[in-house]
Length: 170
Length: 468
Ligand code: HEM
Ligand code: FES
Image (cartoon, protein in one colour):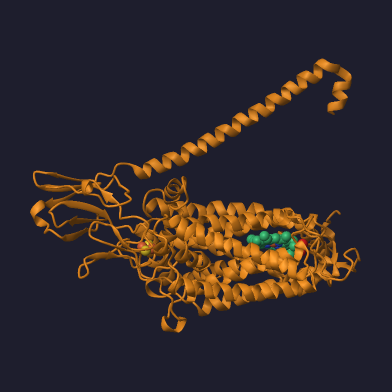
C-alpha cells in the first residue's frame, strides 16, 4: 500500500508520510513515558504513605531514675531496647539483628544480646561480639528533658562501631 | 442446515418434549453429536498440530513434566480463586481468616492443602522439566528463545511461592520472609531501597502483606497467563518437540507421524488424571502447616528460609552475603540465560546427555561435586575462618571475594581439566560444568534443609526433628 501511494504522489507525499510516521512514533514514546511516570509516581506515593510520620514514633520511656545503670529495658511497642550503660548514659538500640533482621532477645544472665537465628551476639552497647552480624545494632536518637527519657523511633541511625558520642547523658 | 419442525419424532414423553423445547436441534442427535466432537477436535487442534512425530510421544523423552506443570498451574488457579474468598490480607485478620477457613468452611482445609501441595510440587516439577530440557539438548536452535521464556516462568513461579509463603502470617512465614528480605539489604547501592519498596516500609507490616498479596494473586498469575501460551506456541513453531535419538543417529532421519488425536491427547489426559489423583491423595492425608500466629517480637530458633532457598541460606553461612545472595545467584542466572547462545560444536537436540562420553563426564562431575561440596561445608564449619586468619582485610574480601574466587577457580579448573582429559567438545564440557554446579546446589540444599538445627549448627537429621 505504501508503495502504491508513493508511486502515485511522488516525493512530497513520501516525506509527508515519513513525517506522519515519525509523529506516530513520537506520540507513542510520549504515551509510554507517561505510563512509566504514572507507575513511578504511584509506587512512590505508596511508599511515602508507609513512611508517614507516626504519632507514636516518639516514645516516652520514663524517668531517668527508673533505669538502673548497666541494665537493658525492652520496649515492645517501640521495638527497641533502652540500655543504660555503666556510666549512667543512655542508648536506644534497635532490636533488629543487623545480619538478616531477626529480633534479638537480651540475655540477662550473660549481659549480651544473642540472635536466635544465626547466633550473632552483641554487647550492651550494641557492638558485635559474635559473627555473622556485620555491624553493631542500629540506634535511635535519645533525648532527655526534665529528666524524662524520650526516644525518636522514626530515625534509624546505622553505625559501623560504637563510639562515646552516641551516648546521651542525663 | 435447516432444522424443520416435522423431523421431531412423534412419540415423545414429557421430559423429552421439555428437553427439545430447550434444545430444538437436539433431536438430530447422532449427526449433531459428531459435529460437536469435531468442534472439540478443532478446538484442540488450535493449540496442537494435526500430527506429531511418533517418537516424541515416548514417556522417557518428556516424562510428561511440561504437561504436569500446566495441570498444576490450573489447579493453583482454581484453588487460589477459592481461597481468595476466604482470605483477608491484613495482619490482624490474615492468620485468623486462614484458621477460620480450615475450621469452619466445608472443604476449606482441603482446598488450602491442594493449593499448598500443588505449589510445592510445581516447583519440583518445573525444575525437573528444566533439567530434562537441558539434558536432551532442547535449548539449541530453534528453541533458544523458548528456553528464556521457560526460565522467566521459573523465576515467576519461585516468586509466586515466596510471596505466597507470607500470606498465612504464622511464625514460620513471618520469619522466613524476614530473613529472605533481610538478604536484599546486602545488594550494593540499590539494596535498601529495593527492600523498602518490597516491604513497603522498614519492617514487615501491613504494606508488606498487601504488596505480597498483590504480587501473588495478580501480577504473577497475569505474567503466567501470557507466558504459558507463548511457551506452547513456541514449541509448536519449533516444529514440535525434539525428536529423541541415540547419539550416533543422523538427526535428519524422519520418523513416522501419527495423529495428535487420540495419540498425544490421550497420553496427556492420562498424565493429568494420575497427577490430579496423586495431589488429591496427598492433600487428604497431609495438612499444609500452620503454626502459631506471627509475633514480631520473638524469632523462633532456628529460623529457616523456605526449602527452595535453603541452598542459598546454606551458602550464606559460609560466605559473605554480598556474594551468597547477589553475586553468585546473579552469575548463575546470567549463565543460564546465555546458555543457549554459547558456541557449540553440534546441535544435540534429542540426544540424552550429548553423547556416551558426555554421560561419563556427567557422572564424574556429579561425584566430584557431591564429594567436594560436602567436604567443603564440613571443613569450613570446623576449620576455616578467613576473617580471623587475615584480620587486616575487610570481611567482604576475606570471607567473600576470596572464597568466591576459590570456587570460581575450582569450576574453571574442572572445566579445563575435564575437557583436556576427555578431549571433549564444548557440548560435553559445558554439560559437565552444569552438572558440577547442579550437584553442588543440591548438596547445599539438602544440608540446609535437613542438617541444620538450633542456631544453624550442623546436626544429623535424626538428632533434630526439623524439616524445612
Ligand atoms: C510454568 C512453567 C512451565 C510450563 C507450564 C511448561 C510447559 C511445557 C510443555 C507442556 C512443553 C511440551 C513438552 C513437555 O511436556 O516437556 C514444554 C516444552 C519446553 N519447555 Fe517448558 N514449561 C515450563 C517451564 C520451562 C522452563 C523452566 C524451561 C527451561 C528453562 C522450559 C523450556 C522448554 C523448552 C526449551 C521446551 C521445548 C522442549 C522440546 O522441544 O523438546 N520450560 N514446556
Ligand atoms: S539474623 Fe541474627 S544472626 Fe542471622
